[in-house]
Structure formats: structure tokens, C-alpha cells
Image (tube, rainbow, N blue to C red):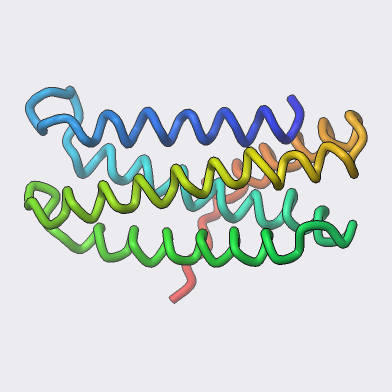
Length: 152
């Protein structure tokens, strides 16, 4: 699988988890806490693997530096928001409003990434390089889930 499809698959997974989480608590089989934990794990492993593999290799090409810096800053903001949400009551209106804002931020990030960043990457990377990055990305995500980094 190439890097573009791997990233898009993750994006779709997170969108589906957000949609599930927006349902009233009694409408799904899992608690909001469990679904939120899945979102946090998915976003964290995705961001770290994406930065390590995809963004690093784009930087080496000298491409879209400002867009990459913006994307990394967005990843950092998402991480901070996830930490705040983790310490709130998942049944409160404040939590749900903050979640909706996070969902909007993540969707905007996805649109930017799948637009200009993917366009640039497709110009500078061969299909073989894209496949290799896709494999590296998947491996990096697996390692993250097995050996999570805890940075305070």
C-alpha cells in the first residue's frame, strides 16, 4: 500500500470513530470513554508515524516546508486538546463541544494534507518510493502501539 492510501485509510478510520463518538451514549455498543481512547491512540500513532516517515522525507526534498511546519503544529494542538478532553467528563456538554471543535480541526488538517501536501509529494516521489513509505508508515504505527512514547 502506498503512503497516500495508508494515510487516507487512517483519516477515514478517525472520521468514523468521531461519527460514532458523536452519537448519544446509549446509541452505540461502546462507551464514549472507550471510543475516545481509540481516537486518541489512532491520532497519536498516526501523527508520530506520519511525521517520522512522510514529513521527514518531504523535508529532505526541500518541499512544502511551511505546510509541513503548519501540519506539525496542528498535530501538537490536537495532542494538547486530546489531553484536555481525556481529563473531562465525557457526558458533559462542554466535552462534546470541545470534541466537535477537535473534529473540525482534524477535518481541516486532513483536507489540507490530502490536497497540497499530497500533490507535492506525488510530484517528488516515485510510485516505488510511495509504496516504501507506506510500508515504513505502517511499521512505525505498529511500533508506536507496542512501545508508546510517554512525553510530558
